[in-house]
View 1 (cartoon, rainbow, N blue to C red):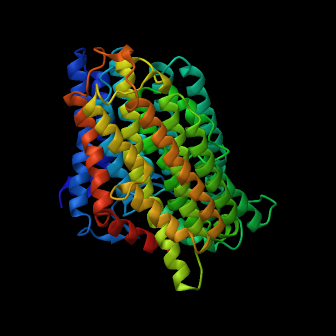
View 2: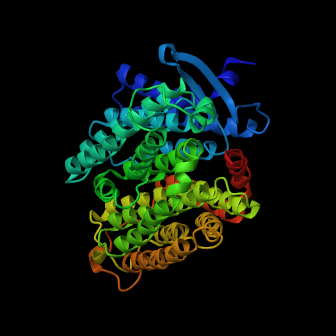
Length: 512
């Protein structure tokens, strides 16, 4: 076995960091060279992910994970550099390694401090990948925090007019949630004698007494730790009422930052719910599942209504992310409710809901990144995002109009595209367990159609605004290079979801 075969995940994880360091060290001043180096090192992670995908089924399984790497990191507290991947994390790693180079290609309008911009983007990619690959709880937290800093600077330095306010709000919300998460991780690691997730999955739920003098019953400590995890992940998803940072961050972030924020960073919260909350807190998750379902439905409905009320095209897409990610949380709530159900049918329903939640994260990553990119395309030309200022642009921009309609339909959940499959699985799985919540979520789906059609009508249809005649140009080759992979994957997942579902279901079945 070669070194590369033994360290696939390390290469995927740190190739972007290597690129960032090279950019910092080398006196590269050419804009073209800086962009080429950044995209090249980010693409190394993508190529390695595709090679790993091809070898995934043949790889040996250790503790439910493949391509496992483990080395002592902080032996005094039993923390390890422990990486692994399964059918839950691999689709999200693929999403991350695909969207990052595409986002870098979409950064053509960035001219000022380009080297710093690319360095921060590459470091952000490592932070996001680390969350999906870490199998040590302390290592998970380190990467969770690492991703915050680059995104803060990307918004505050290259964002819009209110960028400093939006960046500060973003980091205060997310770091506030992280404080409780860190304390809960410390309690769990010290009480269980390890931060290793494979061992914690066995030890923490079965723990019968605390080794720490906290003066609280074990059940209370577990409930507090559960809510610390839930709040941290709910802020990141984000779930109502922790969502208010998101529209501001999206609106002020540069186009590529919004693509990654919606495409990947929000998924860290959903991944945390499935990877950590469900297996580590099965009893607490089952007890509080109805409350989690209420928050999910609120996010679905209020996110859709918020999007419908917007005149700013980018802000409309930002609220749509709250709406779509609500289905991820609804799937998690359905799975939590039937986690230890004796009825095989209830467990099957929960399995379907959880499969749909994971698939929804992947599909939403594609459609949301695509929508934010297309908003950026029109903004770079028109220098406005006010929907009332557009109108009839399909006549001027037929390629852009066609791509926008397709991407909007993917976001809408049109049958034949990926969003339909994932939302159908969530609704089908959640219906028997959470009938009222699922029925109410259909209100959100109705208004999803309303705000998508509103955006398309105001931008593409109706009388042409003469202001844009002879000014706006259609999409160029670079922009099509960015959007076509997202369109292709959305279509592939809608027509043949088995390419992802089989892998996801293996991991979900292991969780159950």
